[in-house]
Image 1 (cartoon, one colour):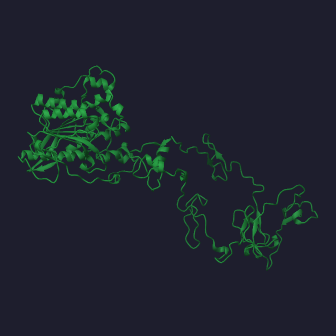
Image 2 (cartoon, one colour; image 1 turned 120 degrees about the vertical axis):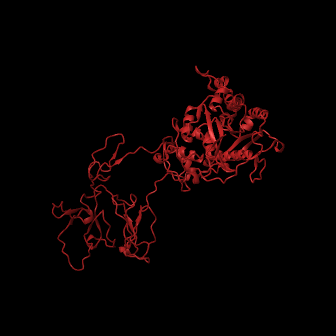
Image 3 (cartoon, helix red, strand yellow; image 1 turned 180 degrees about the vertical axis):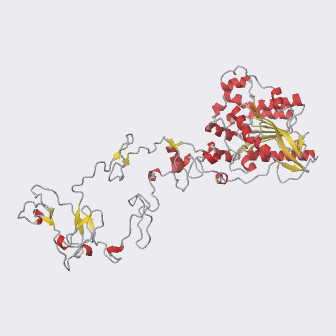
Length: 600
C-alpha cells in the first residue's frame, strides 16, 4: 500500500499479461471513498513473449513488463518438442519475488494460456501431452506466485483473479480441483463461474463470455466483494462508426488495412445476410445472381425537350456516360390519338400486324424491311445505279430503271413552287431520317440514303483491340475505337482464388467486409491511440499475430470495472465496514453463506 497526494495505491501484479489489456484496465480503476482516492500501482507484468511485453509497455505507458518463462523443464520439452537451449533454467520463487519488487501484491491477476482449453481446438489435440503441458501453467503459475509471497514476504495477496475460457470447467476440471485445493489451503474464499459476460461488465460492443475465478483473503478483506454493475451492450456500429474509413492507414495506423481476400471469399461475404454465417450460402438463389455493371445515374436517359440539358461530357453514347445523349423530340407530330402502326417497319421474320385500309405508311399502312432483293445470275450490274453528274455515264441500255437504266444525281433540278422538299434528297446515315411518306418514286419524296456500308474502308487500326502483353500503338489525337486501336483485351477479371480488396454491394445495400485488426482492437476496448500519440498498433509482429494478441487480451473496460469493485472492497475493509447494503449481487461471499461450487 502506498499513499501519495491523498491517493492510496494498492499494489498489483499480472501473470501471463500478454499485451496488457488487463493491466491497462486496472490502471484506469479509480474509487473515491472516505476522503481518499484508491488506485492500483502495477509492480510487474510477467509474460514469456518479449514481443508481447514490448507492446504491453507501449499500450500501458509504463515499463512494468518482465520477460519470464514459467515453464518447468518437462513442460518446455513437451510443448516445444525439444530440450531447452543452453542457458535456459526454470524460474524460481525468488525470480518472481524480484519481479514483484520484493513486495506482496495486494491484487494478483492471472490469465494463463487458453489454447488447450478452448473449444476451438479438437478434443484429441487438446488431450495431447503438448497441450496438457501448456494447460498446467494454470496451476504452476499460481503456485509459484503464492510461494514467492509466503517464502519471502510472509503474506499472501488479498485478492486473486484468474481469467480463462469457459471450457476450462470441463477440459481443465482436474486443474481447477488442484487450484481450489491450493486456495483453500491458504484460507481463501473462492468464487468460480464460467458465465461472466465481460461485454456487459465493461459495456463493450461484443459478447465475451469468460471463466473467472475470484479468491478473497477474509483476514485482509472480511467484507464481501460485490459484482460489477451490468451495462448495456453497444452495437458494432457504435464502436467503429466514428473510426477512420477501413484502409486509411494514415489515420488508423498499420493495423487498419483491409485483408486481401480471395475473390470468391468476397463474393461469399456479399451473399451472406447480415447476422448470418456460412450456412446462409445454402439458401442463396445463385442461379439468378450475376455480377453486372451498374451504369451511372443518367446513362440511357432521355432528356425532356422542355427542360435544360444535362452537362455535355466528352464521352459519347447513351450507355457510356451520364451526360446528355438522347432527347424526346416532339417534332414527329404524332399525337396520342395516332395509330400504333404509323411508320412501322415490320421484320420479315415476324407475323404481320393487322391489315387495314390505310393507303400509306404514315396513315398506318404496313411497311416491311424486305431482304428479298438478292444478287442473282443475269442481273445487270447497273441496276439502281446512281451516277454523279460530272462523271462518264455507263452504257445506255433499253431497260427500265430496275433492270439497269441509269439514274443520275442531277444538280440542275430547279426549285419551283409546289415541289416537295424531300424530292431527290440523299440523307446521311449519321443524322435523323426525314418523315417516311407513302411515295413510291424518288421524285415524289421517296427517300434515298448515302449508304457507307457498301464500300466502307475505315482507316487501319479502327476497332483495333490491342494485346495486353504487347507495347501499345501510337496514341493519336483522335484516339477513339472508331478511328484507332483504342481498345485492349484486359485480362484482369478476378479469378476465384485471386486475392485483393473489392467492394461488392450486397443485396441489403451494404458492403459486407472483414473487420480490420484495428477495428477488432477497438471492439476489445483498446485505446484508439497509444500514449505516444500514434494510432493504436502493435510492433514487431505480423497482422495474424497481432490478431492473436488482441483476441487473447482481457478488455480494459471490463477489468477496469472489476478493479473498481476490488478497490471498493479494500476501502470498506480499511474503514472497518464488514457489511453494507448494495443493489449489486455479491461476488465473493463469506464461507457460511457460500453455495457449493460445482465443476461441470
